[in-house]
Length: 409
Ligand code: PLP
Image (cartoon, rainbow, N blue to C red):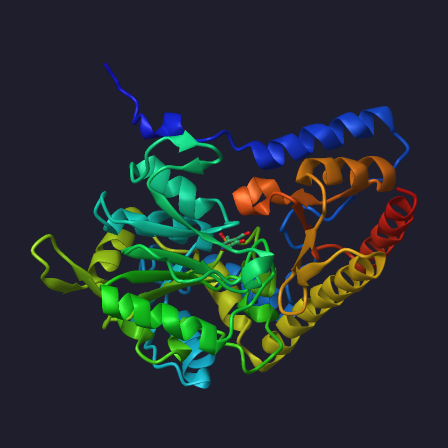
């Protein structure tokens, strides 16, 4: 008899985006002429930078010729891309990371989801609340939690991000072994300063813990004093793994390319307390279960680091940041408090009502879709997330409609 991994029975149905789709479809069916503007989903809307497209085309042509064709590449990624990442994303910021500490992959979703395979089932885990759900669900699937109760999984430590702590969680009161952090944050759009990040690194060093640092939105940081990598904090190389992606940086959500940094100095411990380097274990896992990102995609990602590519990537994120600033400014003017949107493509709005109720008001009175914060965790109740990933025209129009709708409430 083929038996189920019953941890899957603990999973809550992926309710958020299906429920949004259901409500939007119902409303659209009742109002066929209304043009609905979507500021809900975190997917980019603009084309790939030209430098990436040119490199992509050229690499496809290489695949069409026997003399330049490439079959399986290195599972960890081609050296040309790993070298560019190390040089531009780390050494340029005085973070000492070498190319062989970088693992190219097809997405930060897969990497943040898969990394937990390296850990014992009884490690104590701290996750942010609100949270990008992948960190939680993959640990549920693996059996590191008990049942779902009162809106949370028993067995996890929740790091609450609320107005009371300005959306940067405090260190856990209890001892934990694994900590997920994400800055700039999805969904709050909040960033962290070096002074706020340093205690996390110190905590991990003192407790032999590991930080999984998701920096998928780092391209949106405009304040140079903010850390763009956890490795800008002294000692982080020994206690942190970092995830980055070309998805929101260079518009690769449909093209798929990302990377994970596992420093060779980073440690993990066996049941006897003996220290091991973490790097060879991820290398083993990655090369056993993954066969590399396609050559043309890696060439396209490499082109994001050329002088033209860098400029075009910056223009893309500037474009979305302009939307984010307008969202933040307009929503504040109407009288709602919000965070994010200055160094992130998300604005997190305190609704003063139930998240879904506010969602319905915006949909029905303004024809605008946002994301109810409750879908990201208990601390998201009473908030909605606006995404800046849309055209300037659509964002401006949506905000006009939102202003009208909320004025007449
Ligand atoms: N990490 C966070 C915090 C995200 O919000 C997302 C996507 O929305 C990802 C990772 C996934 O990135 P990728 O497209 O590289 O899988």
